[in-house]
Length: 79
Image (cartoon, rainbow, N blue to C red; front, side, top):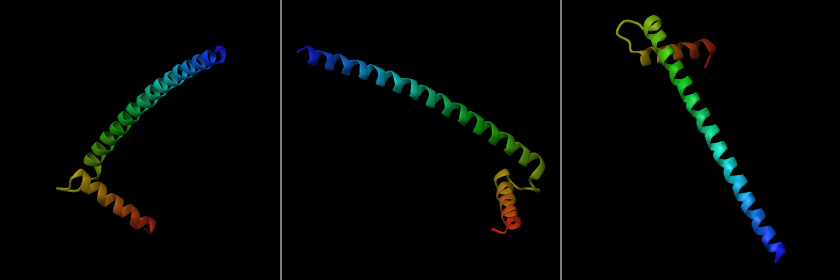
């Protein structure tokens, strides 16, 4: 009997530790993903603005300019 109670208590401790770890892990990973998304979105806005101001040709959209620049880069690199 004593052994089975010890097993039950150990199981409850295990569940508590694992549950706590999972909550911490989810919080850390979720926080990292939010930061990452914010950084990527901020960088995208900056690059779009730069391309719009300095690299677009007359009547060309930002996306069209990016595609044109990517194609020029591939040609320079021989791909």
